[in-house]
Length: 87
Image (cartoon, rainbow, N blue to C red; front, side, top):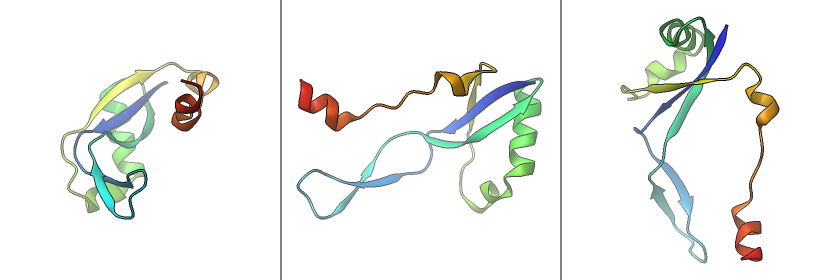
């Protein structure tokens, strides 16, 4: 089985700007989920059957990337604030 990550450009995320007390919209991708399948079509069917909450939202156009079987081993975290401090 292969792993696929499903994303969409639809939807919004809200976050606070630095030194600001109100929330603003951030344009970014929304991750819908990760699913397994022998193909992207099979993984998509698995995704929506195991995550019926997606039908409660207005997401429509979803795309995916195939991930390697050991994608979790390659996970790495980054800190934007730490980067800003060192540059």
